[in-house]
Length: 68
Image 1: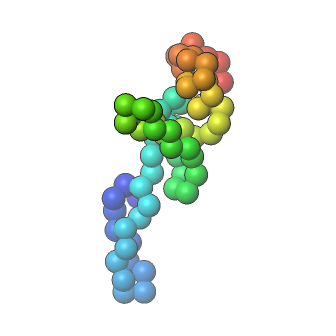
Image 2: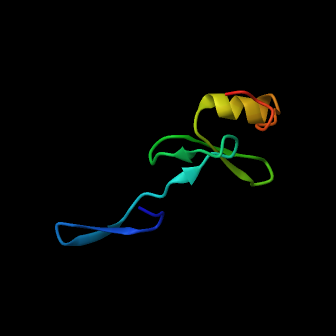
Image 3: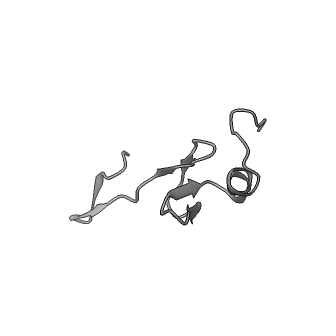
């Protein structure tokens, strides 16, 4: 389902959880997982796992040059 879609369950409509995209790997993050990182300037970064967060924030690596 698309982010922001609605589901009918037992005659009630409720919104589906939004899927997010990892800032570093550009992979889809499952609802309820992942890491939200907020910089001092207010920029919000979403990461799939700690490996992606460490490579982007701590080590400053470029995802195009990193072999997964």
